[in-house]
Each structure stands twice: as structure tokens, then as C-alpha cells.
Length: 274
Ligand SMILES: N[C@@H](CCC[C@H](N)C(=O)O)C(=O)O
Image 1 (cartoon, rainbow, N blue to C red):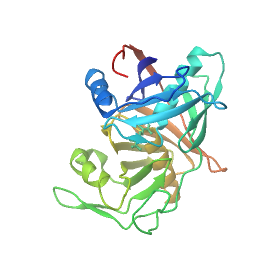
Image 2: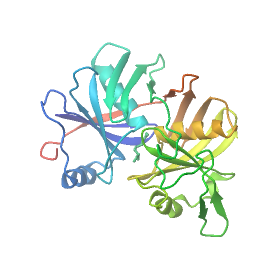
Image 3: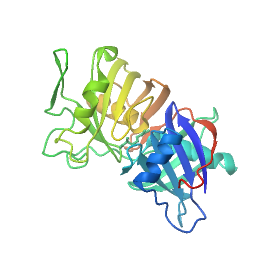
Image 4: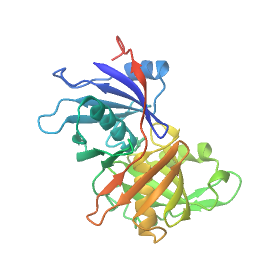
């Protein structure tokens, strides 16, 4: 097995290539904790053999939980395969279905993350609610409150709060309570979006199982979808994360495309760890 430290707009990954191993990647909580202590990451992306797609793609959060989707990690894994094989398109079999990726002329990698889930059961929520604007309020420590986030599944659950002043929010204080609120039975990734104009959103995300990250790809997609459903943007926008810019497009066929930078940081020795 080979492994690399990579990032997508600052979202930190270890990508483990377990293709050719003949059996699925098994990472125990102790192995994940040891890997994290040696090389801190937001997610581990695992590549395994697949009969039809170029690889099976698996995702583990920093807290050890295996989850359904990771937009920036998918872009990082695709970047790695594009580097090793002279081609510009590929497919991954992920938990939510087949994802396709393409290499762009500027070196960025774009992934098609499929159609968002917009029904309350798709997120999932604990009870029926309009996902354009949830009947859900979060008190702020210094007074005031956040209200009515949009909810979107990108293969993983997102709640997106639209705010006037992102810089003023104590995200590390309110993120954990939102992530674990009983309204979200599978927990939630909490996005905080400030719409700059109809093509630009400033976004920070408290990620389920990873905390505040420098960028979240599925969070960027969820923010655009939630913003467009509220009439705040068009179907395309640049999402400005702390670690870089992520262009997102929601096509008329319903598919959401995520693009942006990927960086290779270097190979890792995971001998004895995974
Ligand atoms: N960094 C991600 C999202 C990773 C998974 C997420 N924390 C979850 O638990 O659903 C991205 O780029 O999409």
C-alpha cells in the first residue's frame, strides 16, 4: 500500500492506495488514531479495486467514522490517478453511486458529485421539515441567534446557515452543538455562508467528525444549492473558503460539479500503521 499527504484548498487528506491488495482496506480506530497523531488529517481517502469503475473510493473522518462523501478528497484522489495514468477522465464507485472526475487545463480537478438530496429523509432529519429553510434556531453565546438553515445532502448531510457577518461568528463554540443536534440523526456538517454577490459566497464549515476545516467540497456544493433554492445566487458561484476558492456549478440536469486546486505534499510511510 502506498499513501500520500495531499490537500484540496487546504482540506487535509491522507490518500491510501490499496488497489491490487485483493481485500478491502480495514482501518481500526487505533490505527486511525495513530495515523492522525503522526500525520494530522481531516479525512482519509481509501482507493480499492473495483471491477468497472477506476477505483472504489472510501472516506474516513478524523474521528474514525466512515462516511458517504468527500468532495475535495475525491478531487485529491482523482488528481493522484491522473498523475499516474495519461488520461483526463475517470470514475469512482463511492457509497452514494458512481462519481466522475476530469482534469482541467489549469491543473484543477473537477468532480461530478451527482444530484443533491433535498427531501427531509434524504438529509436525513429526525422529522418532516421544509429543507429550503429548516424550522431550527441556534442561540449564539453572546446573545442573538442563527435561524432557518437550508439542508442538503451531497451524499452526506449539510445544514447551511446564511449569515451577514461570518467573521463575527464563534464557530468553534456553536459547531459541536449543531453537529450533534438530535434534529440530525446522522449528525451534520454545519456550513456558515455569507453571500457576497450572486456569483460569490464566503463559506466556513464545521465538519462532522473533523471540526473546522480550511475548506469543505461537499459543503461548498451544499452552500450553492441552498443559496440558489433561496434565490440568493444563480446556479454557479465561486465559494471562497479559508484555504482557497472552489468553483461550483449546479447544472440543469441536477448534477453538481465541484472544482478547485489540489496539492501533493508528499509520500508517507504508513508501514505498521495501516
Ligand atoms: N471535507 C469534505 C467532507 C468530508 C466528510 C464530512 N466531514 C462528513 O462527515 O460528511 C469535503 O470536501 O466534502
